[in-house]
Length: 166
Image (cartoon, rainbow, N blue to C red):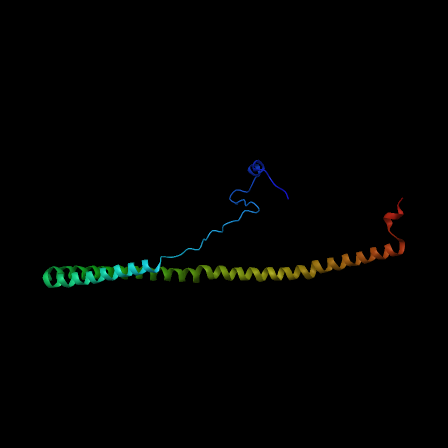
């Protein structure tokens, strides 16, 4: 069995970020699973939220009974705020509609012609490739094959010419 001294282990280089485990030493595996909050904590949070909601409604009812004019003024202010918010949402929706119309126009009048020209170029390239294949590549291959056959026939009949030169 090969044993190392502590000095040898300290001088041994390891890759940074990669833990070095000693043989024979048990390794504890970390539990990396993330657990959410416990059920008791969730129940406590829900209970507090329900109590706050009940308190808000009770406070609102008390204000309505004792401070009716104040509640009416707050109501009117909130109605005005909601009307302004509706106007702002209307303007935002109108701007979004204008942006969509501009996008459709761009797709129709700028992108579509580019795609049509690209398709035309691809079909021209396909035709050029077929022409070159039929009129240049195939005859070259046939000629090379005939020369290779002729060379092999000469080798068979007369032997290897490189061996004849001595």
